[in-house]
Image (cartoon, rainbow, N blue to C red):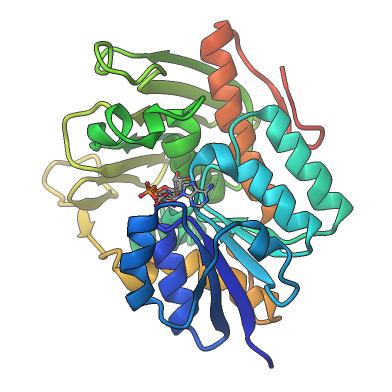
Length: 338
Ligand SMILES: NC(=O)c1ccc[n+]([C@@H]2O[C@H](COP(=O)([O-])OP(=O)(O)OC[C@H]3O[C@@H](n4cnc5c(N)ncnc54)[C@H](O)[C@@H]3O)[C@@H](O)[C@H]2O)c1
């Protein structure tokens, strides 16, 4: 089987995609588009086989390029995705897929028209720790789940007060961070919420140039009766981490900054089972690797386009709820948030 020819747009976290394409036996790293010229100068040594192009059009118009990683700022994703679709490229995009419901509808329309293939780097699903938690649920070790909590604790305040996230026309901490927790929870539960109610604030960044909410919290209700709480906490004073708590009839998981405790008893005398599987750099390409292998007919794409759309809709539903102070319902098929 011939190798897939790849290109990368944006070389922050995109550098990880480029390294993967350069090393992986099924891919060639052919072209890179990065707008920061100083960065380009430094990166040329690291990626000697790639051509650093002067415009993104040089990627779209190159018929030999089959797969494009989009890792630019969030506000460029929608247009770049559509350009890629129109030029018959496969797309691996960094989260968030896009900024708002209109962009989401546009992407879906082109995706269907061109029968495209898109996945998104919702990276936590590739983490051994969360895979183990997912499997505990699959093996019915938790019993019937009735409540979950997920917190995306960013701990990188400077990135929103000083970096591009505070400068683009719109930045959502829910779509940009909380989306990871939304994806994890809907994956573990294999169920979508029927109702969302959310609140948000901007206390931590009040006297900074960041003009959007830096904290949001939402309650999600599911048809089965389960309830979940999801927060996107960008102002927290704690190192970057995610917490995930799952309460089931047979057991409880508390995944926190130092690892997970799995409790199967109400007694204080019985210690929980502790596990902390490292999320090594090599695992951080698990989602991308599954997408590439799926493109060549080997294995399952870990995150489908529909799943990416579902997570975006939930995040946009959370945004709409705190903006309108209303309970929100989502039609996942028609892409309606009301
Ligand atoms: N999956 C994850 O866990 C994860 C982690 C970090 C960032 N991200 C996402 O990746 C994207 C980039 O974030 P980052 O942290 O790497 O930012 P970054 O600032 O570190 O890097 C972004 C790079 O892209 C370049 N760039 C921006 N717009 C461009 C464009 N239109 N064309 C070409 N180059 C462009 C910038 O010059 C910069 O070098 C964002 O959408 C972000 O949400 C995802």
